Length: 100
Image 1 (cartoon, rainbow, N blue to C red):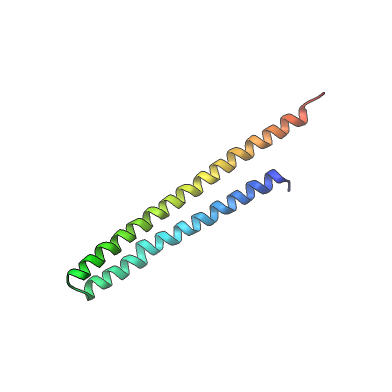
Image 2: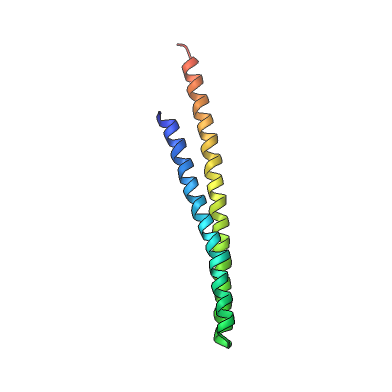
């Protein structure tokens, strides 16, 4: 494996890690946090409870947005890595055909 391929593989691995983190955040915000907030809403009443629930819902939405951003970032890394890999391989091919 040469340097070009190694960089390509490393970029894809990093994108995969970001995708995994995005999935974890998505699960946390969509399942765990929502479940917890619903439990709190049923157990805690009053002005402070309402204020806390609004803040909790805001944090949940922000986590969802962060998960989406991480997913998009992973896709950008993948597509950039693919384009760079193809360009570098094409440049190598052209350099090998070159005669002096």
